[in-house]
Length: 265
Ligand SMILES: NC(=O)c1ccc[n+]([C@@H]2O[C@H](COP(=O)([O-])OP(=O)(O)OC[C@H]3O[C@@H](n4cnc5c(N)ncnc54)[C@H](OP(=O)(O)O)[C@@H]3O)[C@@H](O)[C@H]2O)c1
Image (cartoon, rainbow, N blue to C red; front, side, top):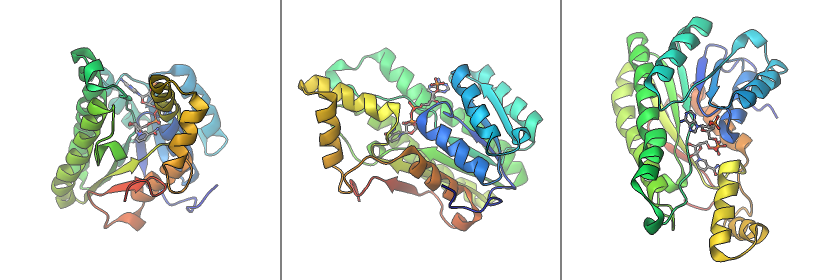
């Protein structure tokens, strides 16, 4: 479904992380339909290849550059930015969708798990953003959208480390937005509740196992806890991210837009 004009992002080169995952994948497709030049990245080469094939049916294949990168590796981050610029020039849009799930209770958490989670969801994502932002500052132009979560706005049972990492994303978004707007750069985040991607489905599966109920029962309970009666789709989240990247959102600064079917207001 195309709800934006086909040239709404034709002035943009958007770098999308987590493009091999549910939300990043759909965001790439939505932004390709809006005429953006895009760089997509993730770790899974086969997923990046299938995304590239799908994108080639939506937009000129020359508008798409794909590169694998492990964002926790500083060399990978620098190479990603360098190659993306070689392909499409200055990066004036960044979507930070790479992330890892938590879903552990306090007694289940250990140092290694916490480090990995905070590294991907906050530290490495922040360092990538910083590198892209320094160039945006020189040009006084750019838009950044971070994937936060409802878990970054309220606590939830069995989710301590993930929730802390997403509170970090919301806090970083708000603070950076205040610095960045002085340079005409907007920083926002989106905070989805459950989205129908592998991340949410495995979290529902884990919770169901812990409680000794089936996955189907767990899914039904999750759906019933949402006033709209269903999970969000990755495309719905992608549409919100894409809107925040357009000029129509030019006075939206430091927000965390909730997409939760009324689950949290
Ligand atoms: N799904 C939900 O219900 C939900 C709700 C709220 C917020 N969110 C947030 O939305 C974002 C996207 O979620 P999703 O549902 O699309 O998750 P997903 O399908 O599990 O995708 C996660 C993405 O992150 C990438 N990634 C993980 N570690 C990485 C690393 N070290 N280096 C580079 N890339 C890495 C993965 O790449 P590879 O697979 O190639 O390794 C994948 O592309 C995440 O930040 C998540 O926390 C999701």
